[in-house]
Length: 111
Image (cartoon, rainbow, N blue to C red; front, side, top):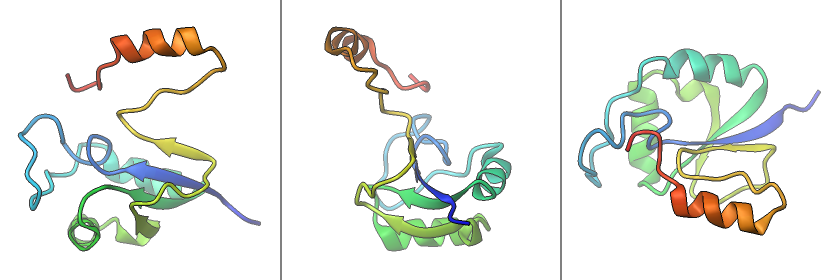
């Protein structure tokens, strides 16, 4: 049985991004609940970490937080997937006018 593929963004989803200034070479600490979330989700789908950060730094962060075993790979490419989990996205529901309104009003949860 093939699992679905889900891409999970690093910043703002798995770490405490947004609460601190962005630092290119420092990834903030893991969010409370992220480990359990990843463990449970990995039973439903093949997980890929999706990030614009340095891939080696991101891999070290996964290892440090002991969740590397739940990810198939790390990528900065938007792979074809069943779902993308990100704090800076909208779900297009077929209506451009409503989407424009959502874009105008959009703020990530941490703002």
